[in-house]
Image: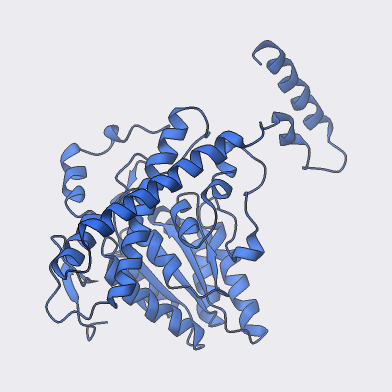
Length: 360
């Protein structure tokens, strides 16, 4: 990767960056086309508004939980933008914005987080797997789909998302090892947001960088500034093209930060400082790309007003869609586990019924 223009040394690591946090272009950097940067900025603004609105719906009691990706929106949007229609996306519970950027209705995406038993959208139609809550399990599924596509001679590529915490799981190792041995057309995008819930990265891994783990599997590993949409598009474009060409998998580590707490049930102030959060706020992916677009006269006040109106309409549609959803039946928890419920399930169902009679 040292031959790539835009590689900088950041915290002793080689990191691909094309736009600095203040919006200045890295000398010699080859930026994506203006149309693509504008499309990416639209995606970032929509993703930020989606995170804000979903958080509000949690506070109103309309969603059970929402793992926000605020601060990580560039990873979310880039992951969707680099895929063709026939490619597959394998997201985690934190990747709602990536699924929406892939074109799925936000109301459908948030169905699961309302407590529904299904993921809310047509997986095959959108080529987006259900959001995975267990860490790293989706990586194995992604490799399986990629391997199947290769065996069938299909041109599809697969992009699998995970966090830094997932790289400590056995499923991560098995997925990357199999993908490398069988040259599966898959890209692993690790969003290194520095915490596995409350566990800091240095308590999870002694590796100099998560991208370095690729060496052990025999695949390329690239570290990219995860708050720089232009750099993400450049790196992921190359990785997807490599997969599609039959050259095997790539591990991409995106250096980013989760600005909100892990979920609404988490108190992030117990394990990180205000100063640390402020330092990452200065690297905000939206402000960075906006500054670049403004400097190049690609974005003006009228375009920004139109984008705000569009995203506010998206938020209004989301509120209306969630409000119109039919109430969830708690007993559905037991309805589709076995054809004939076990005695233990029947006992748990009866306990729930008794509890609901007391506190409906």
